[in-house]
Amino acid sequence: MFLHLNFILCELLHKLADVIYPPQCIGCRSAVANVSTLCGHCWTSLKFIERPYCERMGTPFSVDLGGLLLSPAAIADPPVFDRARSVLIYDGLGRALVHRFKYGDRHDLALAMARMMTQAGRELIEDADIIIPVPLHWTRLLSRRFNQAALLASTLSTITGKPYNPDVLKRKKRTRPQYGLTRPERQTNLQGALAVDKTLYYKIEGKRILLIDDVMTTSSTANAAARALVKAKASHVDVLTFARVVDYV
Ligand SMILES: [Zn+2]
Image (cartoon, rainbow, N blue to C red; front, side, top):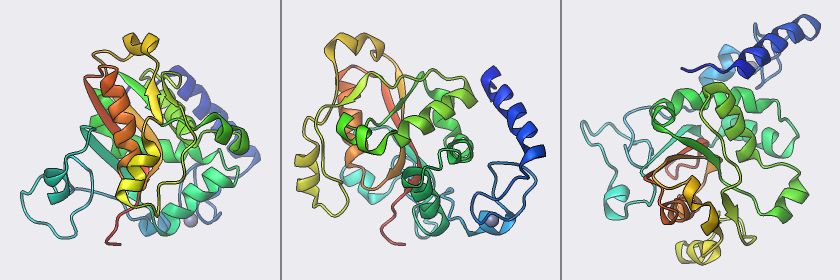
């Protein structure tokens, strides 16, 4: 993978900090060898999403159906995006890490989460021309003070050297949280919410976009974002998230 100079510098600073503050597991605070890592116990408790999964939606198959590449959902109702991948199932420690990162001011978790995303999203990252975060509405940005998707996306860009652009895709209206809404309600909620300004289409046209978010709850937000990027003539839109809600768990 293409290491960036900033990333090397960042690693050096972390090594220096290790001498002053001995590293702790980001899950349980027990002693570990390196900062921004998990101890063996926490690592094995995470529910990683690995093949076999739907090659389109990235959702794990509950049983190995041998050679089946697409889930029935991807065939019946194909998403707007090309491929989606997530590191782990949004559950247990994986869920706790997202909460600490998002609501607990643990911005330091971005490095560990983004590193894991480079593994789960290896194929998508290799193909990507630009990394773009799912945007927050500015009013939500004011109340939360940071966009967790943007922090993950910029960290991923630093690790991989792939260009990062947080300014092209905008959230035009404040939407209600998607979870708990019916499918038609989700679609109405997101109608026209995400868009690329026409004057910025040239930054997207013909490009392979890698869209980043912390959690994929339903695929509605990813589809709405992909629709806006395809309208701006993106050639491909892939989606990479740290966690994913999986219904059968
Ligand atoms: Zn631990």
